Length: 328
Image (tube, rainbow, N blue to C red):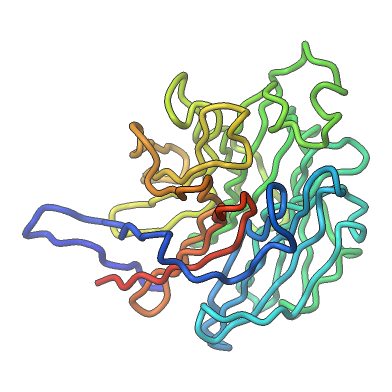
C-alpha cells in the first residue's frame, strides 16, 4: 500500500492527518438497547484489495447488571459505509464474561487472522489469542491459540491488539495494565473482571514484535499516561497511520477511573513505533458532546481515510460510526 502524501512543502507542513467532524458520521451499527452500558463499537477494519471489500470487526455489549458482554461480529461492505454481518460468536464460546477490541488481519499468504482479546475465565484478566482461518467468515474460536498472557509478562492485563506488518516484522500495539499493584488483593484487582475500572492501575500502551505474527516478544511500554492532564489515567493507542514522515497514532485518553468507558480521542506521533510523543497535550483531538469518541480505526483507501469509531449517543449508549475524509 502506498504511503499517503498529506503534505505541502511550500507551506512547510508534512504528514498532516485530516481532522473529522464526528457529529457528521454515519451510523454503521446501533447498540442492542438504550442507555448506559449498551455498546456497539471497538472496531477493527481492513480493506482487502483482492476482493475489493471492507471487513469490519466490532463487539457488542450490554450493561454489567444484565450480564456485560454479548459477543463480537464481522461485517462485510463494498463501500465501507453499508455493512452486512457475515460472522459472529457469543462470549459463551470463549467461556468469558466479556470480549473487547480485537484485530482482523489478512496474512501475507492470503489466510486470515483474528487477534481476539477477552477476559480469561481462569484469572479474570484480559488476554489476547489468535484464530486463523481461510476466510473472514470462517473463524472457529475453538481453534484459538494464545498470543499474550498477562501473568507470563508480569502484567495485570493485556487487550485491544492492533497488528501491522512492516517489512518482514510484525508489530502488535496493545493496551496493558502494569504489574505494579502487588499490594492490592487479587479480588480487588480482578473481582470485576476488568482491572481498568478499579482505579488500581492506569491504562498504558505497550508493544510486542514477531517475525511471523504468531510468536510474540513483549517489548514493553511505548506510551504512558502523564502525571496530570485530560489523559492522565489512560493513553491507549488503538490504531496508527503511516505517513511519509513517520507514524500517527490515535489514542484513547481519560483523566480518571470515573471516565473509564468514556474516553476521548488524542493524537501521538512516532518515527519507530517504540517512542511516541503526545501531540494533544492540552485537550482531546476530537470528542462527542455526549461522552466518548474512542477506538478510532483509520483505514486509508483510494485517496480517502475511513475513520471508524465508537461514539456516545445522547441516551448514554454507544454506537459504531464511520466518517469518510478525502485526502490529497
